[in-house]
Every structure is written in C-alpha cells, then in structure tokens.
Amino acid sequence: MLGELIGEEIGEVTGVRVLSAEGGHAVLESSYRASGTLLGASVSDLGTYHSANRADGTLFGEGEGVAMTADGDTLTWHGSGVGHLTGSGGVSWRGALFYETTGDRFAQLNGIAAVFEFETDPDGKISAKVYEWK
Image 1 (tube, one colour):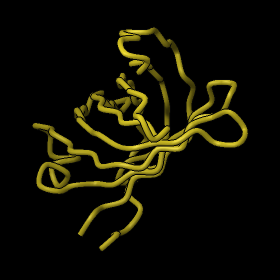
Image 2 (cartoon, helix red, strand yellow):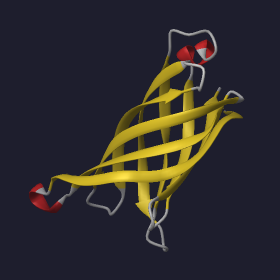
Image 3 (cartoon, rainbow, N blue to C red):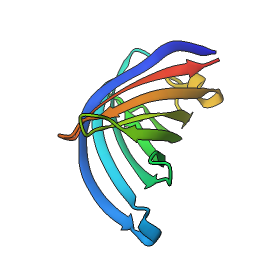
Image 4 (tube, rainbow, N blue to C red):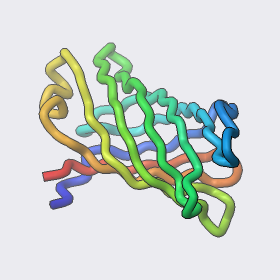
C-alpha cells in the first residue's frame, strides 16, 4: 500500500551522455541536482542514473545518489524504475528507492522501500515525490 509522502524536490538535469548505442537501443547517463525535503528536513540531492530504451518504447533506469542536509546529515539511495516519453518531450518515471544512512535523522529509511514519481521536462527541469511503501 502506498504510504505517506516522505519527500519532495525540484531541480535540474546537470549532464547527459551516451554510454552505448548498440543494437539501436541507446543507453544514456543523466545526472541531476535538486533540493527539497525528506522527512521534513531540507536536503540537497545529487543523483546519476542510466536509462535504456526498450523495444516497446518504454525506458528502464537504475541510479544512485546522495542527499545531504545543511548541518551534515547524509544518506545514500539506490533505485530503479520505468519511464515513458511525455507529449511535451520530457520523461515520466515511476520506481522504487532504497536508502542507507548511519545517522539518526534518517535511520527509519534504512528498513523501508520507497516509491517515487520523477518528472523531467524538455528544458531539463525535474520534480519528484517520494512515498513510503507499506
């Protein structure tokens, strides 16, 4: 069951490069920088993910990153998801995240799966929402 909203952020894509174009299926690496909240704390998030075109026109992606607070709390994340191109030229993603931290502020995230909605627009702007998955 989809649980409560635990995080939101907005930001921008900071870089994209082609990793492979074998067999007509492009694999891209995208990095982004975002800011928002996670469990009520203000965070800055840096992430990189790889996405691959699939035969049916959808995308599959995997990524990792780190979220940090201004006072030094950090947590890392790993995730994967599926996406599709939108009519406006962006990409809409849905998937799961798994967090890891040694600090107390975000310790409750160590034992959960979270699900996300991640949107990009043609200009490289991103927005995301993260929910606890119960």
